[in-house]
Length: 342
Image (cartoon, rainbow, N blue to C red; front, side):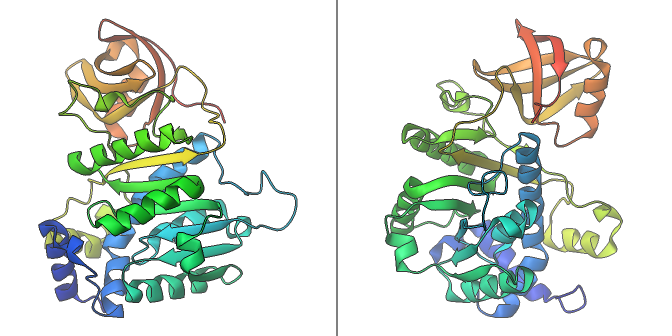
């Protein structure tokens, strides 16, 4: 697939499905070309969200169960990309952590056409990994799952799919989950965080703590846990991407997402870190930001004179992520370091 062979009518139809909410009514892939066009455009944008999540996990020193840091023999870890669509999420995860760390990729979707495409692309990309559709034993059995990958599914699940997803999460050793950064979907994902945390999973990200989600506390109903990913470098100078953004009505600069990473192994996150939710709002001489830490969530002010380098970084970067600072009475009083040491 390339820009010359892209079918704009297919993209227009898919966009209408996503915006109207009718995607939840059943499989919307009609041909393999649908998936090729999607994967090349909308799927790639989802891939940029996954890139942001994976970069953060690397900065925290996290690796999947069965990865190189844990094993001394050949890789045995299996990835299940559930609700795979074009398979962009599973491919991004395996490519980032290294194909040598995985023995198998299983794909599952309510669309047989999507599974055909995802399986084919993964086999092309990772010829040394066993790639297959997830069978009944993988989906309905009792054996532990090494790594469960979930991407952009919460708007499309019927009760049966929700029940299956719940059972799979209960079996997973680790879960990587990325969703749109909307208020509605983010708060649903927060509910999943609380349920899975109560079931024995440790929260790896985006949180810096293992306590209850502060965003879901009473009085915070208007807030939601979301972030912004950076698109690929030089995307604004690419005339084809600019044309796509204009045709689809998309701001190429805006990639809001919500995500959740859980692991049955203990979190290695050092204590005392905070997380910026959304983006800082800048004013003359100061910035306001929504802060999440072990004490809950709160609106804080950062004065430029107190931390000029950080003030500038927050103004020009989408992904500042984790911070370590002290705050009193709604004001950040001391900044220590910007990232945990992995």
